[in-house]
Image (cartoon, rainbow, N blue to C red; front, top):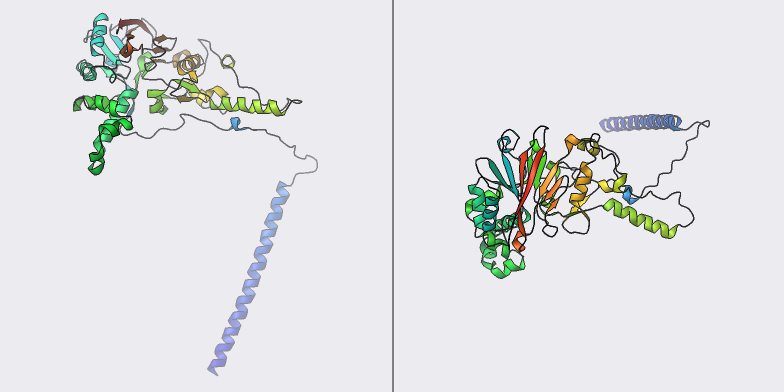
Length: 396
């Protein structure tokens, strides 16, 4: 009797479960079809205004390209930017001077000669080196010692960077790796010259070099000091440290892609030109270059569309456009109060170069050229103005 009761309860529960499941399935299917039908009604175009097809022809050159859009991570304690203290900045009233010297490369005797020629006085003048103070020449420790003694400022050049990295790598070797390290191995890695220079420096001199920034800002004069250069249109805090220490020219990938696309199109299409992608603008097609009118760096960075030449990639080689030419052209687009001058070194092959917003001070002293100093003084009236004098001594 009990067994039959359990059986009846089980059958009743099963029937109840079946009925409930069927009901739920039916209601959900109905609701889904109703909602889908409502969406179709909303999105269905009316017969009175059919949509017009839009044909957008995009090529690889039209894809988004950026450089310097993201803050770079820290690089082993490297300091990207520093500002010159205001009390060292020359004004017309304080009669101070900045003596900015190009690539010294261990030529301490010549540096001493140049400082005498400019009548350097530590009580009124401040010395700044544009990087590559050491290596190649006969007395790298002497140069660093003199700079430290004079409380000079400087930026990190590619030679300081390579020496510091080589010393750090050699210091990190332990155990078998350290035992296997030799002059032959260092030469094979291309470090022998850098390590030889670095091992002549004292611990205090290495520490001084390691603390140097890659970019030194002299904001009251609207001036940047960098070893190799800066990419125009990119804020200084977003510059690539490697590029600032090594760049010589700029390449334009969008422009190159556009030229290749046009070349392919001209080879395959001869009858119709209506769909051709327009050629990239020449520098003369860029916006206003007047002194009174212009844009700000922020307004240019916020644009949705860039011309082909605004996507520039810095490279160490000489096959692209000289970055200084691009920098000077770009400054003319800006409002006068937003323009900056860059003082740099690094490019010994070109030698001393003076343009409206750039000064190249590497005059190849270590190879028998000259050691160059840019002497900067404050200008009467006008915020950010300065006057300058160029002085050189022969290094032969």
